[in-house]
Amino acid sequence: MNNYEINEGTLAIMYEDRGKSKILEDDKNYIINQKPYNIIDHSCKYFGSSYEGRKQGSKNIIGANYKLPIIVEDGRNIVFFPTLSAEDEDCMWIAVNKIKKYEECEFNTTKITFLNNTSIIVPLSYRSIQNQIFRATRLSYLLKERKNDK
Image (tube, rainbow, N blue to C red):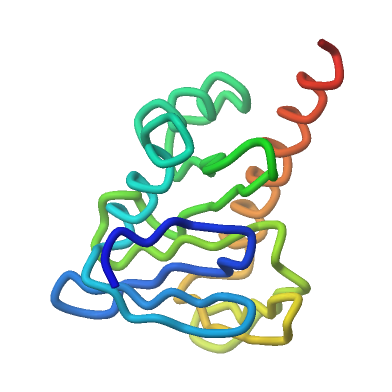
């Protein structure tokens, strides 16, 4: 499968190896021949923007400059956050609205459990994940507020 589009069922995008990604969805998983960054960029373009455009929008809305959450599709409020710099090969992208809970684990890792009870271990501290979730949630909230003001 090539040119995967993120959808309402997408939970996470993880680097697999040799330029491949593992896609977790509500009811199935895929391995595809695209890097996570390329999937994010393609999906943003599919929904009428680009990664760079969405990144600039996130900067303007939440005032941050690095590891920015991205609104992939605003009509359905599909918002993902990166675990590392977006261009980093090991960066994972996680759907903030699909998270049920997250908990601190050993060795500076965090377990994220999604609404469908699938879990992944992310090689980031609990505090880093908490910060990324906060930023993504804030972005989603502020975008909704702006829409409601119009």
